[in-house]
Length: 275
Image 1: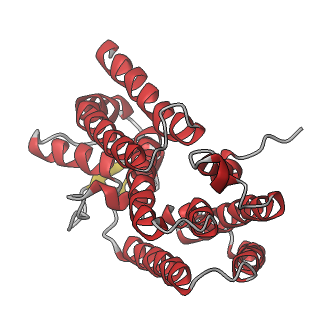
Image 2: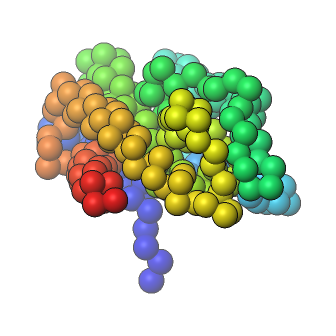
């Protein structure tokens, strides 16, 4: 039996943070539609991302477009307020900008397995912006808030969006720290790789991915603490926003996204100390 992607449950998990009376305003059929839309969007975004980074053939583009159309059809049948669709559109405009910026960003150069640092490093001064390519996935829970008819929903939407901004940025940073070596080989300039390359430059160390990969791994252990600190900070900020709109620590949204990242950070720090 195929395992269901947790993203499917995000609208339901957010719904249970609302009071019982409000929960009853949203019928199961609508909730199921939002859950399906989450998967359509997730699958479409992953294909688009794989095409952009060259790991998937562009022949899959029609499949991604079909998934995205299925997603859009669900949302435009909901007839939500104009404010929702304004926010909805802004999320995808920003997603397009993030993809364009990533495409235009400087790349790492590799010759004979030796890495040359980029001419210009990407700006990672605000790590919460790492969520830009996945923040559109927050539309399911946000739609639930609009459908609830809560008169305070507009104010709560801003907080809910911030929760996902910080939580998804932490998740992206965690993913980048897990895939850092593969990303180096694929000349992808992520935040962890930026730290590694800057440290190599500072220490005047040459990184040879093929013949001396252990040097890259040792450099990584020296930047783990900085990466872990930032993941924990983003998780802390996500928890603060969650608390402001009554998403309790026991809510699956926090357990599935934030708590799992916090546990992974502890494991990574212990592993780095062993090395």
